Length: 72
Image (cartoon, rainbow, N blue to C red; front, side, top):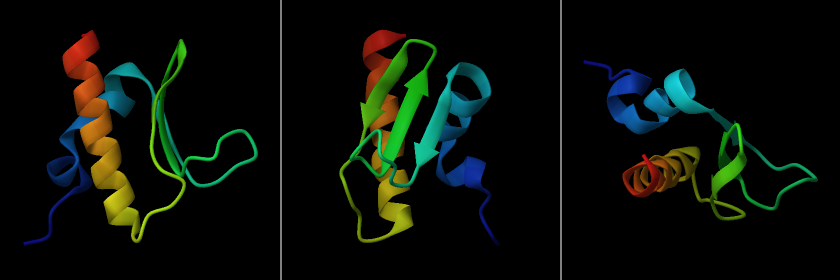
């Protein structure tokens, strides 16, 4: 049985539906590969690179979860 994104990353899913947005990839504005942003700006950013996209998403999931626990 294949998992849906929502099953693997429930916090990221909640974030983009209810709270803010995420960015994935390098750009000239930030050194991080993944970022979570709300209306006030960047609330979390990951490392510059990851071995896999899944590793980046797992880090993003944990980072957003920690922020939500502390701030909401």
